[in-house]
Length: 179
Image 1 (cartoon, rainbow, N blue to C red):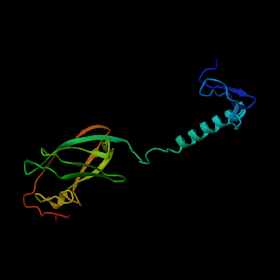
Image 2 (image 1 turned 90 degrees about the vertical axis):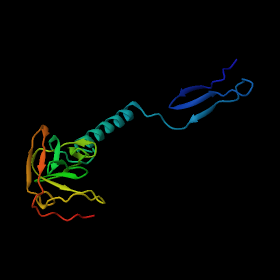
Image 3 (image 1 turned 180 degrees about the vertical axis):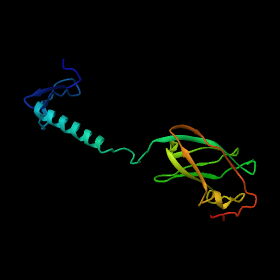
Image 4 (image 1 turned 90 degrees about the horizontal axis):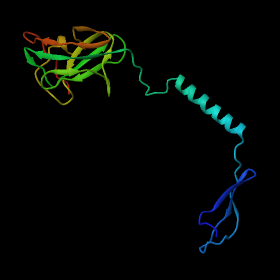
């Protein structure tokens, strides 16, 4: 009796279906399954070598997420304005060169900087620190000296950095709120 599974065998350089059972389990006929040639050992070896070469080249050229990441230090802290937590404001650490790191202050005035989405920290080195309201949000005025042309400067070091800011608004000119 012929099994219900066809028998597939290699004949020369082609796969052949040897027995195709019919409904009653009898062999109908033999036929070729695929007219393609099976790559010889040398062809498969060349293909594997080419794949390795392409992988090495892509790895060497840095095909990653396309983000240039300098050495980063983790930065977190607490911000107050006139002794009260400064909440819902964006804090921005702008290095002398490169990408800025930002965070939104929570209701307690706490923050943790993000270099890019999913990557915490700020570039190691000197930074200008500024504050701004998120688009569409308004609140207590931000003194000009802490806004876009801020006078605050800090150094971020490798590792963990706890940087707190106690801001004062008394007698200061306020920066305009921009939507």
